[in-house]
Image (cartoon, one colour):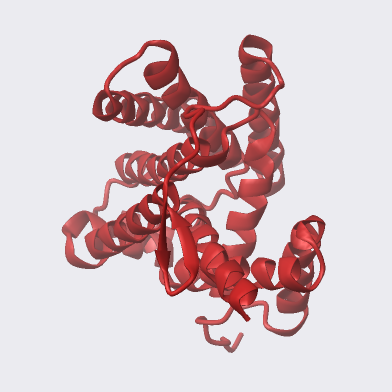
Length: 290
């Protein structure tokens, strides 16, 4: 039982990170009508930017995080202006945009591998100290991961619910055409959306790389986990990313408990298959009449 509780805590921590990746992906997907595969590349970029600023250039932690966010935001805007916006103006099909996003992901991760190599790199070489609650062990980095992930999710969620920009994002997510009709600058809002989504991926990248390091190919597994969390939680509800992320993290923990760590990806796709087959609208979304 003690092992199960420990694995469940680890699953919740991992699920919180999945949640912010899924939230960022959901903002881009719902608002921009793009399944942003390059989201995984942005995650990887953030890992290596933080590694460069903090580990290689020896900048203070706060400055390294700040510069990582700035560069990631610039990259996000460049992706929108240089790739997605021209495609949408040419009325490219969703299949073409999907392929272009995949090509962008492959290009970015291979450039990173070219400059940094394929081996795993660590930001912190020393072992993190741990704290114990009733026999449950949690490292300080894990505690930071959980707190920052939940704060980031809550902050962006409240921004969407309480601010004018957030309401505009919701309006555009619900109906892109009507949002433009009522005077919303959709092109400006698209840049805001992809920037917010990319910054959430950057937060996840910094948190994960600070704990287990990084390699150029880690973005795809995080992208898949985020996409599955978004789908099983419910694409139409912002809260779905959190519910889906936590559920996926817990299910992966149970897979480790009963099987082994090798079954985590299998569980991820099994959960996706079950939800697409029996509840494709997700946990929080309701069925709609056609």
